[in-house]
Length: 427
Image (cartoon, rainbow, N blue to C red; front, side, top):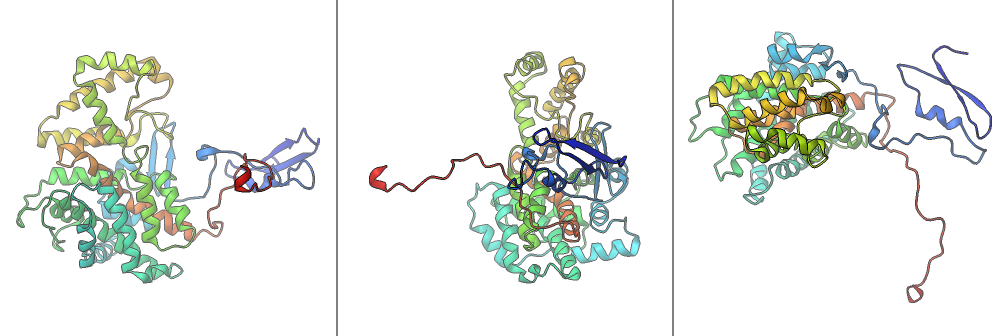
């Protein structure tokens, strides 16, 4: 009997099976041999929401939820947030190594000189109502890019895939900035090739009459937040990109699927929910009463807990530090005092400690975005701009993985047995 194997006895038949174990997993298809009789399809696993199923092997992001570890391509997130630029991280995720000077210069040049969008994109944006949700606009416009670049469908061509990734990284911030301006009835500010990636994005959003005095502290804070969101393993939106991309559709369509998934309040809207919670609390003196309600099942502690992390989210530690730097520039947000006190009380309460509920990335990020002048309904657009490099890296990895086929989960049928059609006069 092999040491790295799982022995299974089917009590229905008395038959014994030996299933190989590799990398801490068994192949689900190996269970198909376990049958009650010859007509049986074979044993399947039932795992709603993929709570304990690995759908891919990936070399991009490593997470140890119990230890609070997050690494991109082996590099600790703390080092990248402290020392890397967003475009360096995007290159790392997509290529696998940090770029040298020449590689970074080419990468930066290629992206910088593709930031302009077709004028018809502006016409498309103008078709949205002034109060359209920014994520709905982003979803529609990014999906529409596939019609502007029909060559993107040639996904078997590596050079072509590179160009589409460059286009997306270049144009999505421009589109996101135009959406920001559209919501305010402001004229669009076009990209400037003399600015860096983050500086250009911020300038397109906040420049008035061609004038904008950049705040380097706030720009670096935004860059850190985007780096912290750049990838996070097989989350809902990344899984959507992979699943839709597995049909071999163009990357603009696959990324729009990720945007659609991120649009949902359970995924991209969590930091907005934190602000709503802090507004509900209203004052530090109301925190004990709020905590009591949460423990009684009468509310939720938003921004605490995570599907993966069972200790302090490493991104939350970095964002908390960034928040201090931002508020030194913008002035203290009264909500921050409530958040800090809420965190202190929750982390000392056995109820939350036993449930391993610790602050996650959303707990402080919304406060920072709000302090920098972004409305709450725009937070998720910022999340999408940050997550874009990860989506593209995961899409590229999926296409190059020989084990991957078009995504097609199994189901357990629970409907009616065979029935004869009943004419409408007899129903």
